[in-house]
Image (cartoon, rainbow, N blue to C red; front, side, top):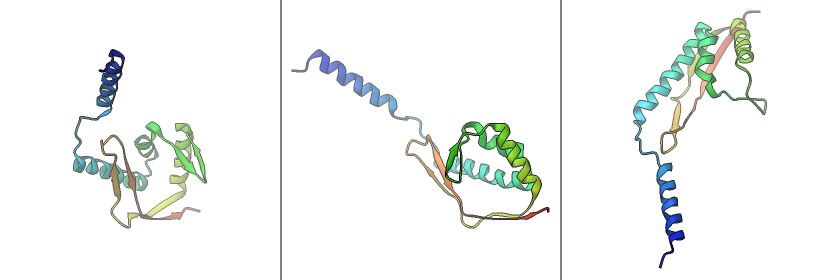
Length: 125
């Protein structure tokens, strides 16, 4: 015989599990197209040297990983870095070598993209 306490715990766990399941299906191809659209916009931002648009595309939860250091730089610091970089170079090439690899979590709540690209720049000085 199940006690009231065991029944309550079982119901609680069942409800907890059910609340963690994402019942909203996602359209894999539609989401891939959206990510590729963002990916292509990054290329355009580089050639137009539009550091603000590039930064705004990235910045909501921006994490920088550089030389083994993980940081959360302020938006103004990152903008200054991009402005300096964009004003010092001319982009010759910023092209994918292979099609980007886009992977999603099973529930569609997160995705990541792996790119293999050739970036060629000339420095102004």
